[in-house]
Every structure is written in structure tokens, then in C-alpha cells.
Length: 158
Image (cartoon, rainbow, N blue to C red; front, side, top):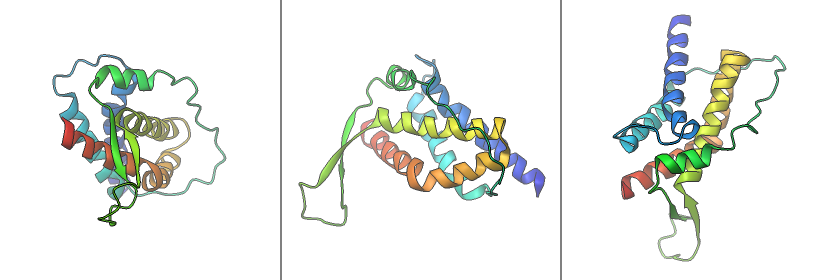
């Protein structure tokens, strides 16, 4: 069981590394950026259901993302055609054409990258349990919505 958990954590880190490179580095040389990104987003989504979380009761130092100011610019350099899109607030209301918001694919990917960098940082600097617990906590309330919106954007625009 411990080996399976360790393998899942290693898979999670590999998927995180594959996605976050698009935010950490400008002009990533990959002929299939969208396809690579799409595969990795689905992998992260799937790993949420597969990896087991355990709460680590230690009081750790918090993640500092203040030095990650270049992420939106790097995402833009890697996906120059990413842009804004319309989000309907209540998709079950078939007749309301006015209640919508504007989303941004660059913002979606940047937020996903921030979330995943924190998960990886916690795994490497605090504990695997802390990183996985954070992943299990942040995914359903933040990361998942950005992934869904970004996958929909990619499907419709790339």
C-alpha cells in the first residue's frame, strides 16, 4: 500500500512538472503545447480521485507565491491565442441569456499552476501527507473549476 501511495505521489509530481513548465518558463519548445497541456490536465483531474489523502497535523511554514509573478506572462508566451470566454452563471436556465461572466484561459492556467506549485512545494518541503491533503482540499473548491473551464476553452478554440 505504501508503494502504491508513493507511486501515486510520484505520478502527481510528474504531472505537476509537465503543466507548471508552461508557467515557469517562457516560450516552451513543444510542438503540441495544447495537446500536452490537455493530457496533463486530465491526468491531474484523474489523480484527484486516485490519490489518498491523509491529514498531517504538523504546523508547517506556508507556501510563498510572491516570487511567482511571471507565471501569467509565461503562460501568455506559451499560449498566445488563449483569451477570454463567456461563462453562463446558471447553465440549467435555458432562457437566461444575460446572466454570464467572463473567464480567461490565461488566468485559468495561471491559477492551476499556482495551486499545483503549492501542492508540489508542500510535498517536497513539508510532507507528502501535507501536499496530498492540500491537493485534496483545494482541487474540488478551486482547481477543478479552472480545469473544466480550460478544457472547454481548448476544446472549442484549439
